[in-house]
Length: 205
Image (cartoon, rainbow, N blue to C red; front, side, top):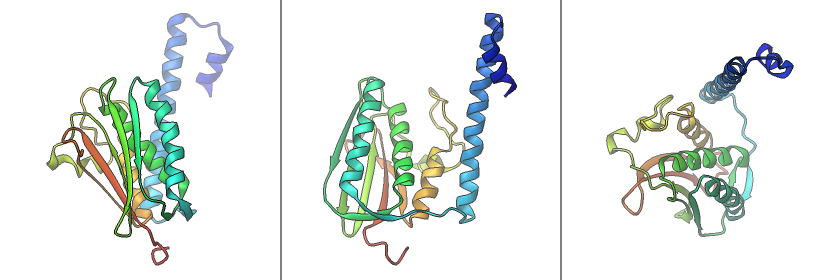
């Protein structure tokens, strides 16, 4: 609050104003990390209540894909969605959208300028399978489980973010009684992160 007051009142020298803005940015980043850690703690304690309801999976993903395309374009990249099947899946749309956003953000960071990030979704053997593929350098097989741990960031070029996105995604999918994993992208380059939820979740609910 004190930093915000200084910024609003003005009268600062350029160097002082820059320092105050840097403080505000760091405070915002720390607040985000605190909120994410609190979420993980609540998830581990089963203290989060999901608002699960039957969702039109295709429509849900098409709406996300529309926003994802705009985000990718703003970064000079491309986004493509391949969605098959018309099943109804029971999940909390707020939190599954957060998972998709986390995976998309990671994919865009890993993909070079002008590259493509793809979303692929299908219903297979009673499972709703959703994957985000990037065209980045990929992750070695022996490190793919580590990327779901807290604060793990393997890329050296981009150290932005909290390093909690994939840990949060795994917690959210776990709360939905689903699974999430990382594997090679289908074209052999980049990384593919896949999550799966059962189409019939009556028993799990």
